[in-house]
Amino acid sequence: MKTYIYPENLKANVKLWLWNVRDFIMICIGIILSVIVLVNLWNVIPCAVTACFAFLSLRVDETAIMDYLFNAVKFFVTSQQLYLWRKN
Image (cartoon, helix red, strand yellow):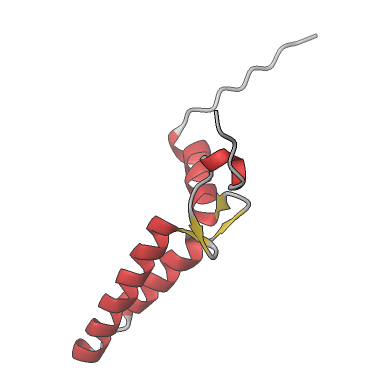
């Protein structure tokens, strides 16, 4: 088996600046579409949605704000919590 110099022996996610490549491509497409909508319709809502997605998908140490929010919603809203009290 070959060992590569690339991080984690070629098993790390591909990143471009602070985003995964998939997120970066989605942000670029969103910016292009937002500029087209802004020029033609004078509507800034797509720009705001793209900026929010870009902020939420920032990755630092393999953790994104969006991942944290999804896990928080899953823990507090969608999963059942079970508490047991026992008398000693």
